[in-house]
Image 1 (cartoon, rainbow, N blue to C red):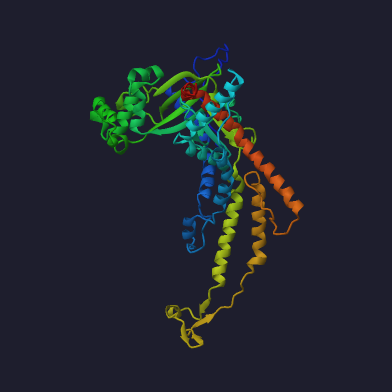
Image 2 (cartoon, rainbow, N blue to C red):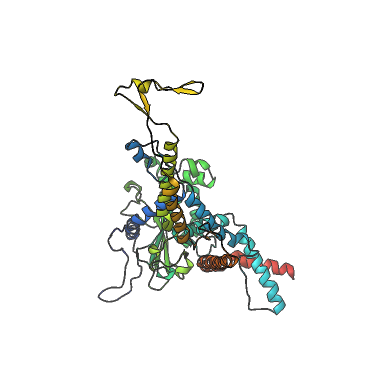
Length: 488
């Protein structure tokens, strides 16, 4: 499902003079227009991703409301957990990348003697490993990144700060870019991520106003956003920033959580003609006009021109293959198994209904009155059972599920395994037939090759992400110097 939209409101070369614009995004209006255009064009893909997420979450194959509407609410309508099981099996190998290795990375240095290099390389690698493993969000981010990579084929790790190595993880559900963007970080012209901040989280950026302004924060604009979010009746108290600041400085949870609405902002990265990337943050929805910072006078919450040296310093994308060459053409496990899972679930639900029907005794009233239905009681007299007058047993033919449905289910299951061979290992004897030792050995070798190929698609961007973390980590140098000093 594709939705045509207007061109992005991003400045290019002057068509007459060929001059390069100073900034590609002039103001907040242009930034929000770009975001709205990208978001609207992604609605079709967003719906498809939601269907895949619902499948992994155990959504039944039939819409319950539709069954109620047609009078079939008692029909079997359950998910048999096949999709979740396939996904869990596929994810297991990615968790081993961090849990089964002594060190996340190896380090090589070019200075010192041979003995010093060996010692220093071990120290740096060990401290880098401990720094990441002691980060409370590391395991969560790794699992989320693996989940997005496997489920939808694209996972994104991005940095909100050029000096902070603690990255965040998302997928194409939040990381938006123009349709048709080639599957390479260098090809991303503009990208956006929607974020939500609690009041105390946003206030932390402007706690020291002078430093905040030097870094690129618009302190007055952030204040207005906080007051609008925190004050239940903002109009008469909108200028009372001092009162609100006291509460925020005191870490008052009432303002941080209970009173405050979440402040929804949009991070935007724009690649300038220099190749560097500018970073802007603006409110997702403009403030009311009575704040003085309404849509006509709105400014960026944060703006820093050419903040990052290159797109690869902002985000690292994990792609399962190249699809049609574009990010939105890459497909993950969910897309590949969705039709098979729906059909298998429907067939199993139908088999369950058929089994229940075959085990039931069907009776039919002999007249149109409801008397026979009201007196439907089965009386036992020793070895005999008596029905009330007016009812008769209906002979029924029990369908042979083994002959009719089981072959289809077996074929669908085999097709599902074949289509997901890159994500999981295929059964050793999928047809249930005995195999020779040579056949089993050959298949195991094939599975090992396929598993390695799947891991390598994740491993290459994973190495680039670890490199960016290492470069951005100011703590790494401090840990190294202190450890080497102790060794000496």
